[in-house]
Image (cartoon, rainbow, N blue to C red; front, side, top):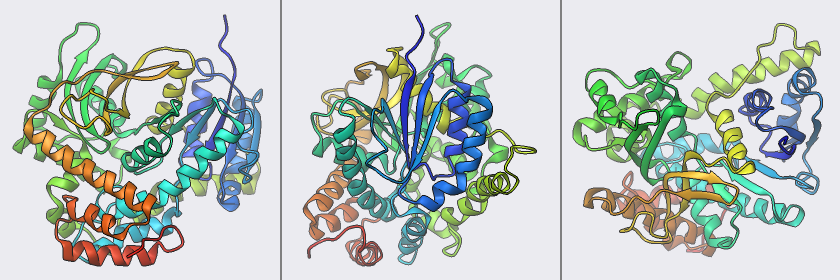
Length: 443
């Protein structure tokens, strides 16, 4: 029996990640066949910049799929089966401020961690709540697969506002990317690795890496390798300098805490002062991304627009982000029970953490959604770190929903990258001013 052809809506389809996602949809067309693809973005200009490349690529490799490009949210979700949510509220202009404003106060300037992640999270919460309500108007049974950052804060907010909606899944591609990098080091297929993992999004640890053909735990072998070699992403030659540093930081964290293998993002919480010193306040990750992937993809799409053909144009595909998005949808659509690191409401998965925490753990993806693997009790060190970070996430969500300045100040003060109330207050006031079109707090 053949697989049902799916209708997919991509939200934030003006992102320069989308041409590579189109490549992944083409490469997986036997596993995850499409009937219709709706590309939606509120920024018509960004969508139009990519349209010719996407249209011509789909005509060449996947012409049986109906294509719709729209900036009308009342057309974006009609009859859809899956919503791939990839939005960036405020785009790169706001991301740049998220990264640069904290650096003024000697604080980490990063788009998902620290004060920048707080500001981005506050923008994302409102946009995501609006999107979910609109999706449910037109597609009450559609799966909403959220990859919008900061995924930790977004997941807490959506769980609080839509506690009974069982067809929202929040997931991040960084564990997937790390597993692919582990596989390259170990010289095996990433699909033969069955990870065990616990934490919060961008705040977690790999505890085991089981090799499915034999059942062997390969984590000790990997940690031994990392004692003598820098950890590098599988595509190190294509990565910007800041990402290479992020991966190398895993070696440093392991030198202090060798029990489990940390997510790269934990570096911002363990070494904030050091990271600030290494930052150029006039050229942050947003500038690096604009000069890198953003420019490369937009230049390719502009060339297609001018010549009206794919002659001399590379085929873009998403070895991490795009592939993971399609594989996740595939596992849910056809009840494949594939293993991913996913974000779920805790409810006893980690037995000594709050039930309402949105934890990140290994689990199977079925037609009913994520089925997490039980973790049990975690050690005091990890419990303490996670409880503090979850308190920050929860206070951030409450600050947005209640427009509560005091809770926002508490959130930033409890965040390990800030701690100092004077700095928390100063950066919060600056971020409020910069984000006044997106969120407001009552003093």
